Amino acid sequence: MPQPRHWQKSTFSGGGEGNTCVEIAATSPTALHLRESDTPNTELTTTPAPLTHLIRGIKSGQYLNPG
Image (cartoon, rainbow, N blue to C red; front, side):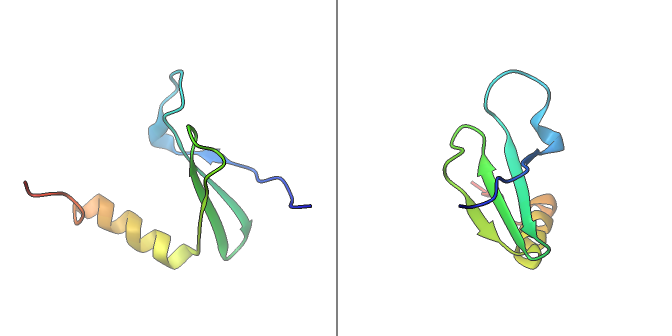
């Protein structure tokens, strides 16, 4: 039986009602799980390095659509 995950909400999720949150849980130092609160049964599993790369790209605007 899998252990329950301790999900943490993004600080950008705000305190309002509804399911508009990105959540993260760590099951080990190298296993990170991401989900949206409106689809809690769908998870993305990754490691710290790719997640760090994605977050840095988002913050820098690398993934913005110029159109």
